[in-house]
Length: 240
Image (cartoon, rainbow, N blue to C red; front, side, top):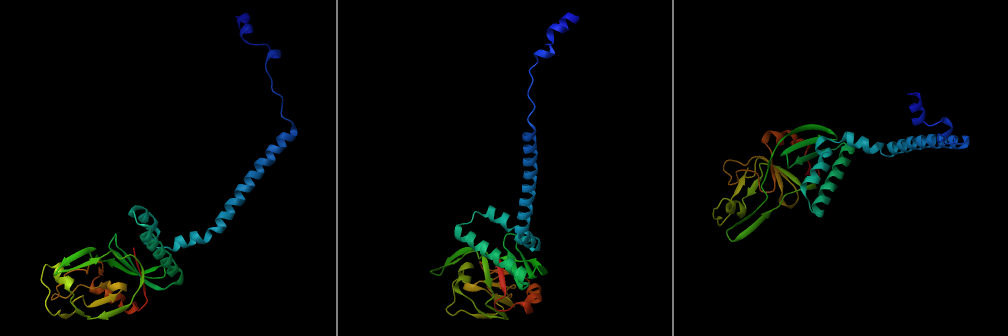
């Protein structure tokens, strides 16, 4: 048995041995390791310092803006539409820092918020008017989705609305020879945005318009009445 172990185990003098690395090489590896740790820590601290303000802005941003990046990725927008969305976001963040009053509208969730800086003063549901093309009475009208950053152009209580022909065409009715003017035809409260778009309360029962104006937005009487004193010409409205 002892002879067999002797045959299978090589003699100590025949084993292959490796020379020990010199002292200078060991010291060099230690210095390089310490240098790498210091460099990584310095780089991390520099990045944290450079982007500290970005992190702070994200912490001040409300949920609807923080999620906007994810929403944009899912929308399949054209370049122009994407640019409008991004410009709206940038202006909204500027308003957060300026601590101004502004209104934001989330068309996907059909929600609105009225903010002072990053503080939400009131929020609620709203109706988004359909984006559509209406044809009838020998004419055609196209209402496209409204997205972007806008300023309030005017606001009215008991606005006298001259009923346009497209309302009758939408209802499948012939347009009258003379369009009637109805107080409350667009609702008791009407906020005008550029290009004829509006935010309005529910139309009066006598109005041929029964829901939100196409491409526009309808909020309840109570909601519009609550924020009415803070809405003025130029008040920012962010629609996304």
